[in-house]
Length: 439
Image 1 (cartoon, helix red, strand yellow):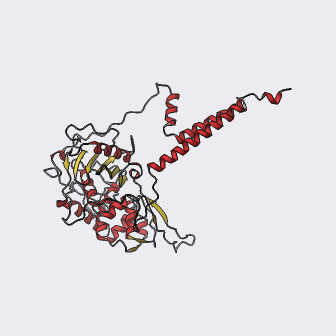
Image 2 (cartoon, rainbow, N blue to C red):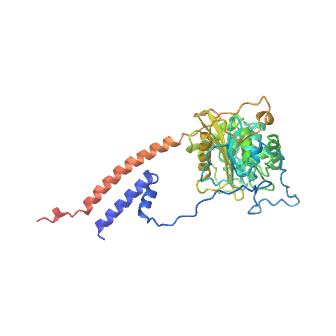
Image 3 (cartoon, helix red, strand yellow):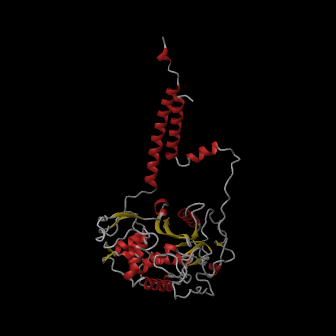
């Protein structure tokens, strides 16, 4: 191959790379034309079957030793199963539960259990194994946040400890000696799912054991009888359990707190740093940093109100979120999901689309009525601010679909112009330069 052929090949490769960045799907289109039609495919995905009620009394067996009780502590027994299903007779079904005459449920859902419900009326629109028992992972922080937001002085400043910094799992970055208001701890807990923030919050509630007791008492008062917290953060522990039905009810209760609704809708805030370790002469001060909301549905789904993510090895992917469309607000929950065939937030989006498409009045059950679970003088379910924030919470500049669409358009136009220019140059390189040798 001659040198000019190498240049032509390089130009074409660069052009393809630019189009791949500018046009989503270009690479797969090109690949489909380049590959023979007889290429092999992977095994089709199958949604887990729950028709035989495998998790009626307790979650699946753990895959590690995270639920082994501490020495001297008993193994928790399974939570009692109510004789009459909470929420209506159909909530006792274990397979897919749909309204009469409704279309089939969306495909590509790997969640073993899920539910779509109306945030305001409490109507359950559709579900799968609604009272099946699974592990909540960090979605249990919804319950901790509800307890803490009603009990703590949000303006109080607390000092970070080494115990906060040493917790297992996801940490936002609390450091010893750092000064944090309870509001900032709630931001770290709800937006960034910090287990260190959960530890700091639980410490103010009397410690992990006292915080868990308060969480479980609240769950029982909400008729969430499939739920038992074992840790404040959602790390797996002995007896940890929840259900899609319960998680929907817990989230609905949390959404009655205006600040919770605001925090799950917030994209980014600044978080304090902490001082250098006086025992380490090589250490330096640790400056503050921004923390972002880890819920991708918030950035990618039209009308998303926010929610809470979760993951542990035993729980797998868990998710709870809400969205608004046409004056209607729906909640979606996922338990024991996986990142295949699509990510959990994308599965949630499919289920939300399905729920919004159902006619008004279509339902298969109900969440506990507000009169049963909260005082009559409690505030109505909160609505997060549509855009700008107040002095309490600082939102980042939006970077949703409109921003991404503009960026993609600029990339596409610029990429096409550059590719055409490069191709013209390549043609000139490959053409014989006769003028140079003309006598």
